[in-house]
Image 1 (cartoon, helix red, strand yellow):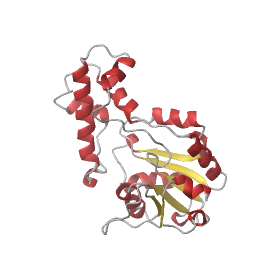
Image 2 (cartoon, helix red, strand yellow):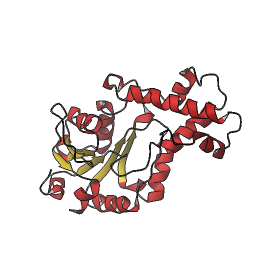
Image 3 (cartoon, rainbow, N blue to C red):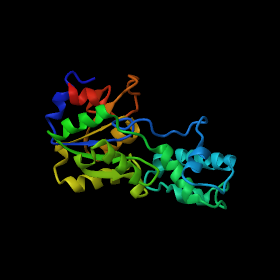
Image 4 (tube, one colour):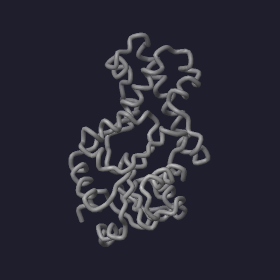
Length: 238
């Protein structure tokens, strides 16, 4: 753990942030208790039976989850609609674009007010950016940023779904760095995934701060962050 988390920020002029589990929460609602058919109907869907919607969404999410966990595919990650069109359970269904919206609705989280206020404080002293892994199109996330009043705080927003790359791919980090035009030594990345965030930052030559919410610590083979904190508020408010 960092003895004085805030003091580490004085070493940098730019803070790049992961999103889910860092300042956005409540997303990735794909458990067995979720009613995807209810979301489908709320979005105007009428043609597909509830069980078909349920099975199709889960099949897509589970397929992408397997690919996501394999770093060998971090620069060949398929889009949601592409996956729906390829899966045997969904390829012949109508309204695939509506199923794509259902998946986005369940993937999207929210930015709590406490985190929005903290981001505003951080933006007063540092330039900010986001590098986020999402499987869906980015527009709902930009809308949530705007609702929370934080969209204007970010000098760059890099979403994996804009390309075929996902963290820990170096390509996403390079994309963000190309937009901020500062030496790497002035940039620190903050995130909660050792593999995707800390490993990805290391691959791009960046310092990193790991959010270890559960206090589980690192494994012997895990990438090593520059600093460890319990949550983003601890870093900003200390």
